[in-house]
Image (cartoon, rainbow, N blue to C red):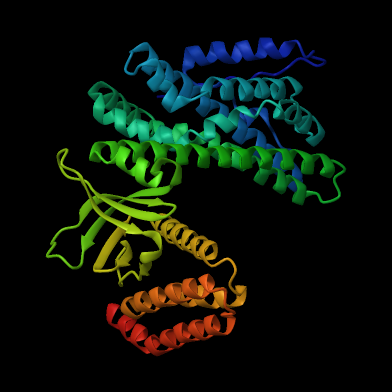
Length: 447
């Protein structure tokens, strides 16, 4: 497909009312050609010897034109065609494209005002951008939907053959770019704005517009931060919903809620593959690894509805350890240890692996502090450090149980046990020191 452009050149002294007319021209030409009518090569010309600031401003304006063009493609060629051909229901379209219409309205109107001004002077560009900055809150809703949009596009491509065919066709039409590549562009553009402003600021450090640049950058960073917070909130809700459905499928949801307050104590969940090292298991099994405030749950997923809880481990009885990746391997693994349990978990990504370890260790630390709140903080810190760094499961489990039992007895008798706790902590550290050579040998063998 050949891209067609025309150039909008505002008349000198054009009034603000002309913005609407220019935007209508943009929309009209878009309807005819399918592309936003911009001509970067002729619209934003540089002088023969441009300054660094002029070059940065030109890049800003040209990339903004390209971005608006991509938004128009996304709205017309993707969302518009899906609506027209009724490939998805309205609520399914919303799940993918969220409030795209609002994003397009903000940036297309801003582009029309930049056309009207016809200026590459920094104060003029900042005037237009600052005017529309207050409307960019709409990016929060859109950007926080990115993860869900990707999931739904993949899901609907499999569920609806006609939608899957459409996605494949558009990939071939747009230089191998699929809908997801266009859907993510508003997020990419939002995080690009502070970078462009930073380049503008560094291009001329004596520029009188620096305070205004700082204010705009601060506002944009606030929008990005709020978008991240909303993304995390939605991701947590999605995890809770997925876990809820999984527990209901297992037929144990009501039991867990009644006995453990599972719904309210849910913290994190992750889809994993697992191998029970104590069993003759040849292939990894898919499962949900669910973290609650006081216990860990591994739910085995079967090919049919015969899913079941594989193991249910009290939080303080469990050890979650990182398994170093072997040479050439891209797998991310953890070891879940408990009494008579030795389970190897394969995680989807290194970020997910870190999240699981940090979540479990944080909960265990809080649980210990809660149980032993009146004990010497220094002794507790030393004991906790020894517990977290030790990898010798038998000595660790035995000494940890001994430690907790001893402390509880002493607390009940209201005796001064600080010196004894310190000694117990020192014992744990000594165990760690003794097994360190063994750990190094194991690490060498694993390589």
